[in-house]
Structures are given as C-alpha cells and as structure tokens.
Length: 131
Image (cartoon, rainbow, N blue to C red; front, side):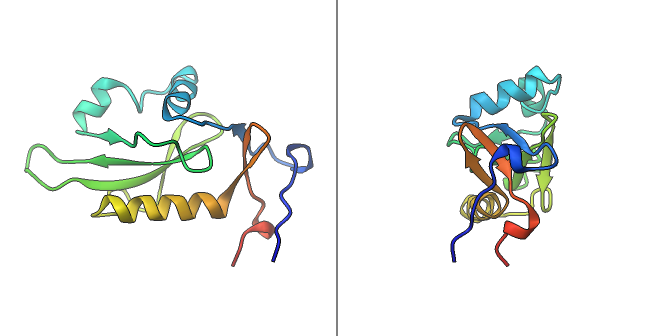
C-alpha cells in the first residue's frame, strides 16, 4: 500500500523542521534556540554520549548515559528534537540495555512518524501512519 506524503503547505499545524543531515546541524539548531542539552558540561555530568551517525529522518537520535558514581553499565535512550529546539525523550529514559535495540527502535519510530519533504523533516499526520 502506497502512502502519499503531504507537502508542508498541506499541513494545518506547524510540523516541519529543517532536515538535519548531520548531528552537528541538529545540535546547532538546538543551541540557537537557547537550550543546553548538548553542552560539554551537561554531557560530562550525565556521562552522556550522542550518536555520531545522522539523525533518523532528520530528527530522531540515540544517546547513552552511565551512572559514574555506582559503576552501572551504560544504557541507551531514544530522543527527538522538537519544533522549538528542545529535546524530547521517546519512551523511557535509559529504556534500552543495548545500542542495537535503541537504534532499531529509533529508526522504526522515525520511519513511522516523520518524512523528508524537500529539505524539511515533517511530522506525519496520524491518518498516514501505518497501523
């Protein structure tokens, strides 16, 4: 079954962001909106790592965090950049014990919820999502 993707002018609510081809573009957009998720001090405090591969569908990415105080293993979290530039946790914080599972979920989530239309990443309307 073929899905017709809407153009950005057909969407009633603002749902489009620039399509971020690289993580540094997503990070710059976030910083330009006054947020600090990617700041070095923040990443050091949480012992956080950010994926180096391009964000899925220009918006979704994986982070990993480790509690350095108790020598816990590293766990993975799926994240998404919002329209205002803030970062949203998708699912549970540190909800994945393996990098592979986190990236598989991130890719599937992005495929279901976003599409590239021109140079924009557009949130798909609910009726266009696959069941």
